[in-house]
Image 1: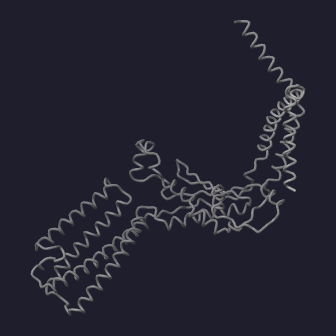
Image 2 (image 1 turned 90 degrees about the vertical axis):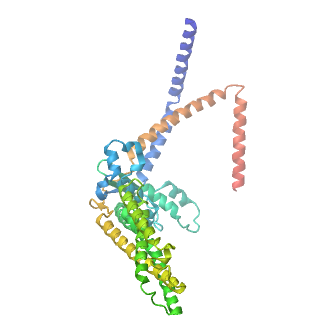
Image 3 (image 1 turned 30 degrees about the vertical axis):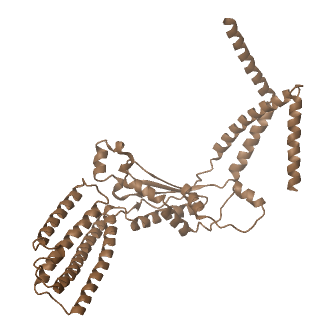
Length: 422
């Protein structure tokens, strides 16, 4: 057992010694490759276009703090369990900054679709040797992707302040793009409904638009009936019809308000519970008033004994008054939502102008040269072992014919490709 261990250790020491001898013999070869890599890295670092970075700090509304139940859960230590569901206003703004809506506006505002690349690049150098054809039009998706890579936005977890950094090959353009990113983000956030009040306002706008059309149709139907029959009143009934129509309008308006609240809150929300209770109370009152005559709701109160023509007029009159009252209630809700939105605007503020980059952000010349030199050393060592292998194999009578065949096959293929190219 001892002899076997000694033999293995001795073989291991011999193999390491052989490797060291190989490297010692090929040391100048390794040095040449490492030097070549270092020279190439130095040339690239000197010729590469410098990249500058401009930074702007953004203060979100409310300092980026969580609101409502989210803040309570975060304070109790349960916020981490919910993860992304407790996104702060700062996180939302970061998402807006990186959105295509903002990036496309920045592209159009600064003419990035027609802007030519500046400075030295390997791809540009290769293209300069190729035959020049018709100029290809840039694809917006590629320009947007390039801009997205150069725009970085991060929110501080403690203060909520957002740091936006924009990189460019021009110092002035970097500052211009940073300011443009802030301006376009502010513009998009003013147009897009993000807060609950803004979402409610947009929802009510759609409901008012639909109710306005229905009100116009009800008015046209009533006027057409009056022109056809000459009937202008049912004699005392319209007051009852108006009261029932107003109650029905209140019920539907409360239902619309409840639906708007449920768009951003659950059924357990106190506001939703309050609106649900108010809606149920109005609905019970409407059902009770409608059932007093024992007829369908459209007949109203005290209309069961009216002639058929009067009933038709009462139905049309009630439909008109119902739509009119509903339209007024929705307008009141809409104005209230607009006031609430103005009282709690989702506006962002820039904490000063974008910084002017006096020093380049990249390329890091020292880092590039060091990494390239280390890579050259490793590649040189690897190539040295391969070179030693071929050198030793060429002297082996069994391996030499195989190497000669490989060389001849490669040379034959290269000659074939050269003839095809001509």
